[in-house]
Length: 138
Image (cartoon, rainbow, N blue to C red):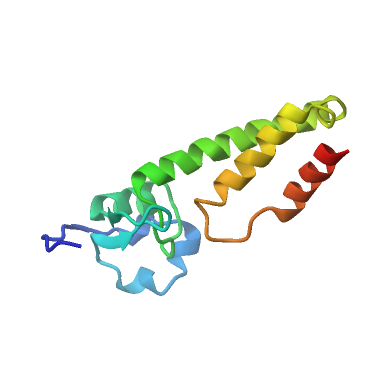
């Protein structure tokens, strides 16, 4: 990443979540400083700005142990996919009998699960994918 001046803003750990208040950082963190990182998915250089950290930890109450892995564009796209997956889950809960025979719905749901794997470095939902594959092959 290119050389740039990193910004910083004062931290107020008193506004952190209860879980974060029990971390070692609670006793030492006095300011947030920009954190450079590379997006896990697209490899774009990105910055978790000091201002974003203050908002994330003090307003949204996210854990101070959280680290960014996706750039803004990839994060936004992953949230869209998650919202569509939530819709599939909701539809499934209310109309399972009908939807287990709806190949278009099952394919769309499976495709979304596969797409999400591009944005998360952790274990995919293998059980759900296997269920959908089994229903599609029936």
